[in-house]
Each structure stands twice: as structure tokens, then as C-alpha cells.
Length: 157
Image (tube, rainbow, N blue to C red; front, side):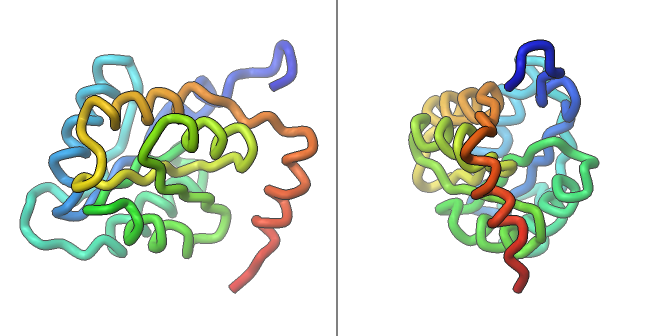
């Protein structure tokens, strides 16, 4: 980020959160982290552990990020994979599944990932907090990576 440029976290402070039943408990834990650290969020559901379809909730949150209503997204399902597939169907979304902090950092730095997906059956609350913290506090490096991210955004289905 250029010196003097406004930080992305300040400009897009609202975080979209969503899950299916498999990610519900982890979503609640991450929301505690967001509240404790002063992040604003909008919850796109689901609101229980009753069976729910991840494409519905992944799409809602992804559309909020793609439109600019939310700056980034945090999505949860059993593995993180299904909800990431749903989110990545929305043009302009670069959703990644991460199970450790290094991948989350590089996804932000080099790929300008705008949605992080975590698996409630894969990652525990403590590790999830570390991954989310890195994702939300790492900025896109730009430079040589901008061209590649633009190429991703130019891909149409």
C-alpha cells in the first residue's frame, strides 16, 4: 500500500459473514473475535445448526462484498470448500479456503482475496481467530500482482 493511502480496513469496515449448518458454531466464535476487535459485520445467516444450503448464504454474502456494501467476507461451512465455490460464482469475488495463517496472508498480499472461507469441521476456534486476524490485517501488495488479479476479474463464465 502506498504511503499516505487510506487503509482498506478503514474504507470498508463492514465484514460480511455467512455460513451453513456445518460452519455455524465457528461463525459464532469468529463473530466474538470481530466484536472484541471493533470490526463491524453483517450476518447473512444461517442462524442455527439445522441443515441449510451453503449456496444461498455464500451468494448473499458474496454479492454484498462484490457490490461494495461490505469490504471483505468471512464464510463458513463444514470444510470451507462448498461455500467458497458458491462465493466464487459471483463476479469480482476472490474467495479462498485457508486452514492456516500463511495461506491467508499470501492470499491477501498476492491475490487480493476478498473472502476467507473456513471449515467448521477442519479448523478450531483458536486457529480460526489467528487466520481471520491475518486475513483482516494484511493488505494487497499491488504492483506486479495487480495485472494477475485484473486477469482473474476479466474471466467471465
